[in-house]
Image (tube, rainbow, N blue to C red; front, side):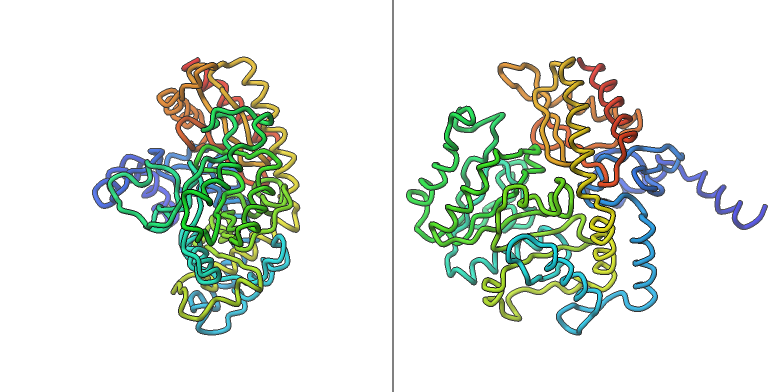
Length: 437
């Protein structure tokens, strides 16, 4: 038996259960899906037993161009052979400069200056600090069901009790208002007859729930973790008007929606919204941890050297992977593919919905799609237990997804997904729904 055969046999002897047992003995948090991964290939993940899974979770939207894209791999290899780490604010490093230039070229509105860090959560922290520094106002407005991270400051902004329970008190000065969740309106209204009552409530919150010191409103263009909540088309422009009216900055959290996911390079482009600060993460690093916040020239002028730091954020390796990923998205027009394939996915899911009363709502934009499950069409009672059964059945049939909100299946396929992949995923979901339908 030669050396390669020995390696192969050794790997085959190592089972998923072996990996799971070792994990439980040394790791603090249990995994969501109990499979042990070996490798990824394009739109697929492969476990230790060589079972292939169609990946419609993509690491919560991180692997935008699929797994092990050759151009991203080549960029990583090239950079690894030269320089892996150096703080992007200690020395001039070409890969971080090139990535910042690329972001400046493709970003919406007047965004032009970038600070790199390790994650979207860290980027939200930096964005909030910059907004406070620039406006000299300390209060912030965020939304019910939003998600911005799990540090103390970002959890304070997050509008979900499940991410906060048992870990307070949190940062003061955050005002939460209802989101534009038309399927489950907090104000018991119907769009468009409501006249955007949730926006009117935002104005009242500024008048009655603040000290007059709201310095920024932070919003996800599409609430991903909250349940893939897509606002009405006239909603975000109205939020931008409120910001201008009270001289507050608009912070847009594009951690999950940015870089082609919604069918545009950035989700706010669908609504012609120009943010003062934009937060990026997830797909930005091409699989390597990387976050960033961008600001307009005017807002960036308030930043001083010691206002924010991130030792490994924006390291040469992550920036090289990020630049390669963005180039793949732009050059191969994957944001356009996301638009086309997203429309196809919504249509296919809509066809399944007609035959399945468990599917209360199908919504999305581009390749961020949610299927909200309900026990009853009239009461809209969330089908929480049914959701877990369906996700488990789908996984066993070879489809990996994730969930959002109380009972929403969240579908985040790679941006280079094909109709064949979508057909396969929808067939598995339809078969899985029959187990509880």
